[in-house]
Length: 150
Length: 150
Length: 150
Image (cartoon, rainbow over all chains, first blue to last red; front, top):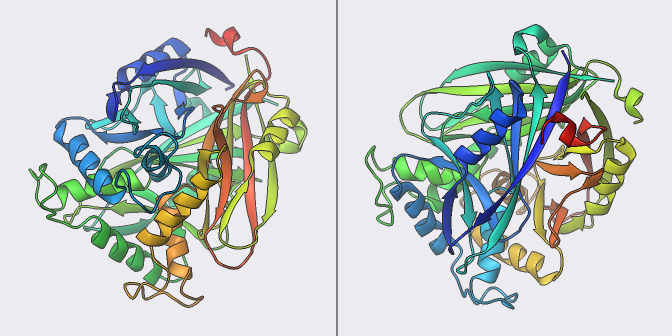
């Protein structure tokens, strides 16, 4: 069984600090790939926005995560010297380092195989809105993975 | 040289907060894949348990990591509003965001190529035991990677 | 369109705590792979050094990240019991767990496709210099990804 690759990208227009659900868009790219078994890897091309997998049922979960990050990495912290773009500049880089720029998600039976309560989110860490580029790379086989011995 | 994909999954029955070593199970899946060169990606289908790579020699390392997380993300923190499932509910989500849901491990010569002191662990962040689903996807080539020019 | 795999590895000689830019070396491995579309995954075979993607323009950003980590995970913290190798031993493991051992980067048109301000760094978390092994695995297709339907 040989494998193929499919790539696409999203431009996510954020409205300042907070999360944007990318799950449906990535699922659509997986469906368009024609690949049945493998991985879909999302990658954000920035260091002041990042990716998280988070509970998708109660939005309070993402607000609580924000509350924790805002306390752990405070805006305007005098610890930071890099503040060229404002008090949220360096915290955005630290938050990005603590979360992920790149997450590989399983593809099974031609679909994104996340847990029931799992969503993929872009996390904008700056106060201002930005256009964030996200690449999605699907690597896998068109056929049934059992062909390879599962 | 063409590549193949192999997938399998584990159900890890945890006994509450703490780590379970998955290294041997993932190594077994790599061996079963028949693939020699590539990556084995583990993925946990939950947002209150996660994956870590950690020192596998002294179990005190993982206990110290737990001590640090318990202090940094305290159970029952009044900061959190999402506490539907108890004082460890929201901390479990924050701990998961700070560690990983998905980790890609190199496969070389048909074996999982971790460092000598490196183990892959499922980290249960809830106090109660759960059945945690982990997918393992192996992508790579059956033959010697030198065929592609290494 | 079938895909191929190419692997190589780096030995990074660090000079104690701090970051080493790996971007050019990984880009060179991607070019040597002959693969045009896919992913290049870097993996560090240690649990006291890790990988980060970070802003590559102002070195103060990485120094500020270090200041934040040094405060959040202090050397010699009495919380830690595992101190066999000194006061920076356990903090190195915690810092590694909070960042990444494994990062997948997109490959496009035969080149590493990072954001303009994005660099890949090895982060040495120990005070002493070490030789750190990093594997780079490139998985993808030699041809144009549009062949698969992009």
